[in-house]
Length: 477
Image 1: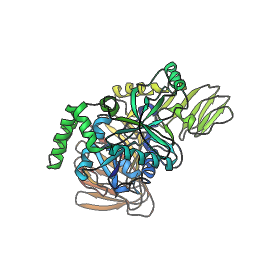
Image 2: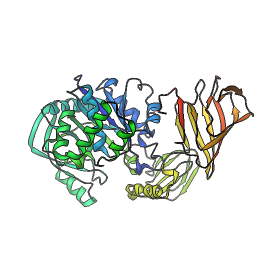
Image 3: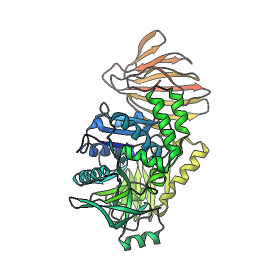
Image 4: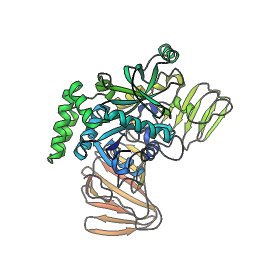
């Protein structure tokens, strides 16, 4: 494959339809849904068979990048990360990556991949990318189309123009796109399936970065102007606050609506590899084994006489009796129960949670960090209680909080405390306090995990009340 080929992995989504396992700051690409690797780990491992790690760009946001880097720690020193100040849909995200690539390589060609797809057949995937690269050199905006296996209403569709063949490669063909179609109702999906001229829209693309910029100029000139201004600010060392402000003003538009549906260069390759967008809980039926009554069961479940239902649980025991065509998902702080036929509507439930300001849509009670993890035991007005689990040899950043004090109680291991100019060790049963605005650090100097109960007090106990002075993991101040 050419040295001018790069991969842009889109990893900034929130996966609202996969709630409550997926959260705004821990979306579905970070979940182990099938196999022992998360979806984003599987995506990176797959794409490394096409391009070297130094040519991979992961597009995400500041809230998710820490966890993503932790999951991709095997490659994080080689991978590149492009951070969105906030989600503005796939159009600006892909444009941001394109300008980053063009600064490095004016001849860059991008293969754009979502981080949360399940793909089987790495050889056929590599072959499709190679063909996409060839067509992209001819100026095409290439997308991969999936041959439908049923009347799916959760995917968009592509109607290919089979009379407009643009090329062939090792059994694959590329056609001009006649039109893109929104997610259809069941009757329309059945008609598409019967006609045979429609493909599922995979959301994967291949194009030259400079060609993408030209298409933005034709179809999204205002968005292009904003991206160009941002790129110039970044290149000349502009202030981060200005870059963030500029990005937030960009139009929020998907690459499909904003560009592909308008372009005369849209090209589709019907691919041969197995593909599934794990979009909703009902899609697990196509991924995981079913018992003799047609149920998918993952977790600690005791069931009597349920049929064709999906159970996905964590630690707690879940009991069920006589359910049919239902979805039950249980996490430590939230439970979802709904008919399989309505799993597309989970995103509406998440929107209600967002409007209420409910923390259950943002993150889990257990949050993973490069140094270990913390579990929120209680969160109330004026205080928060956490259990901190720190790996041997790791430490927090040297930090300060403007609006809260903290009290630490060691329950296992040895804690090394930095508080102002003092450094001292504490063992199990010992405790200490950290006043508001005191510079401090918690460290595990031992060879076993450190467990600490942290009680925060203050008018505001949010995770963003932190000023970092020194950090081992490259996190921003």
